[in-house]
Image 1: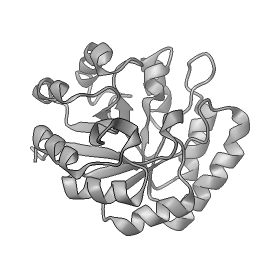
Image 2: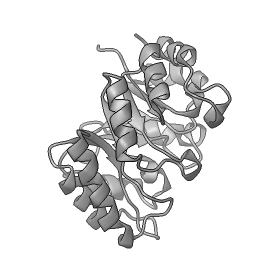
Image 3: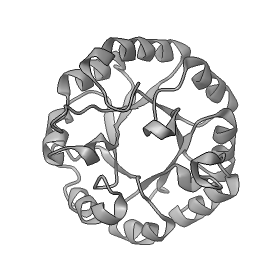
Length: 228
């Protein structure tokens, strides 16, 4: 079995270098974690790309609370990021009633055609997770769901995660489950034993939470815990 995949959120080149030196396999690039992570500026993506050799998944989300009127702006930013060399992305949109906004999600998937992407934790805030999975199952490039199983985090979502892992390979359940959102170190041994093979952290990689930069020692501790 190959080693589990380990993704760390980075906001700056300093974060990215620290995560890489600590043993991260991939970075999720965002800005403004006060809004749960928005699309970074193209220049910031370019600076991080120049700083590290890791794969970079770039968040495509321009505000906390997507509206259809945001789509043109988002597509323009997506095009600029692709022109700068971005090759992997993170996105996914819901309607106000908690259903997947398939029109917006499909439009962005088409804009990143040929790229791999993650449907992010919007699934944890959806009205029906299985409907979200079924709706986006055939969108090209989708290879990952970032999820904690519940909006409240891994503690609340553990049983949901286990149920979805048991369906691996079924329609809607082929993408990899990337466990993140309220993930703590004490969750990891049980999740590994259950068969999960991809983990995502943000504030847990930092000294003092989001107020601090990524700490390579903390990343290294998680790398050892997850497996090397």
